[in-house]
Amino acid sequence: MMMKINPSIKYMGYSFTKLLLLSSLWMATESHAFTLSEAWESAKQYSADYKMAYFQREASMEQEQQAKSAFLPHVYANASYQRQLPSISSTRETQGWNVQLNQTLFDASKMAQYRQSQYNSDVARQRFNSATEELLLKVSELYFNLLLIKETIAVHAAEKQAYEQQLKQAQEMFKRGSATVIDIHEAQAGYDNALAQEISALTEKQILENQLNSYTGLNSQQISPIDTQNLIGRYLPHFQQYSLAKWQEIALQNNHEYQMNQLVLKSSDEAVRMARKGRLPTMNAQLGYQDNVYTSAHQNSDYRHRGKGFTASLQLSIPLYTGGELSSKIREASLEYEVAQAQLLATERQIMLAVRQAYTEGDALRYQIMAQERALKSNQLKLKSTQTGQQYGMRNRLEVIQARQEVAKVEQQLMRVQYRFLMAYLTLIKESGLGLENIWREHENVVNSKSK
Image (cartoon, rainbow, N blue to C red; front, side, top):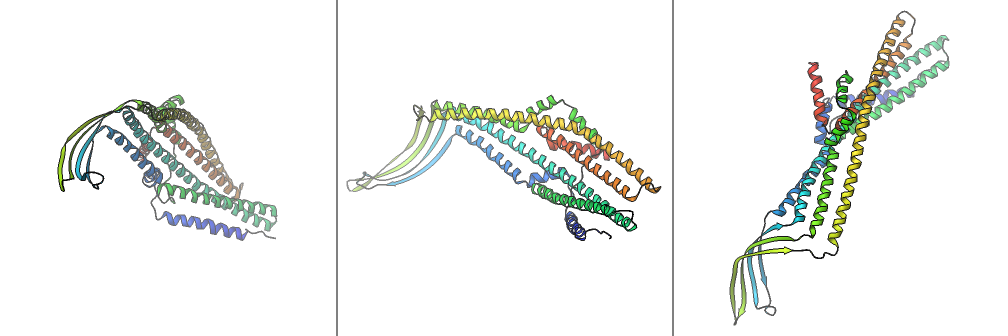
């Protein structure tokens, strides 16, 4: 009895995978292939999180101007009209206008608030810079994963084709009595497994494309590959230009999140001072001009008189008792300062750990890349030998297919560790606060100049 490929599986493999691939190709023709740098630029224009961080920065910076305005003159203009019953007052009507200028002469609490607002503006800038770097790193991760899953799909497609040919060969050999039904079942199982993995990879590809699209707004069906030639030679010197201790030192000097938490601590310190200085006296000056007309009843007739002129006053205010409000504010500010101090310490430890992990991972991955490159060369030589053996009748077609399949798998593994190496490098740059865009563009310019 002759075994055939399961028609439902074959139809499923053709319909589902072909449909996904054809839809991908159709959508890809509608868009231009973009690079990682272009994905970053688009993400900064499209990402709602990026826009939110930007407007939060702008709003926070306005608080500095508001705090500064407390020490500038405030001018108000007022107009009034009042009418009273004769039983209440002899003055029936009062109408007039006035202009008043208020000036703070001394307020230690507001001065501390202004210094705090300056720190808060710097905090907003650093928070925005940190959000930008996080966005770029996330886009990079999705970009690399999408490139990798495309390679994975190609490997599974080749594997499926190899098992399909193996199945056909087993069926022919079964006819001649040189194979058993077990050989056919093994080939069918291998085909089904490769098909399932291909479908799973295609589904994951769509998920990654949707995620990248949600960050960049670009059609992620087609992206430009990353140049991975001589990856170690190009990037390892940048890893090793500093020791781990030096990288950590650089991170504590430049990392946006760490600088932000340092500024939060300084702002909290000013908040404590502001609360304590709330017990000090304040002094304000007022200068005004008024023009009022009063109408009153006098001997069965209306009598009007006018009052106008300048007024000046100096007000000294000393808080004597506020129901415990000031003491409570001081305690609250002091506790918030302790929170900020603990947060700074936690951030420092997180950054030190992140730098250490990225540095050590990059160092370990370079050996994996070298090992995978040697494995690729070995499998390529094996494929060449198998092809030569087939020419002389020492190897069959199936063995050639399997050798080619092994080469594809090793290429996939090599690409995987290469992208992990790049992610470790970008993470190290991001945590060190050196600027992902500037560093990456420097590498791109070097590669482009050499290619020319």
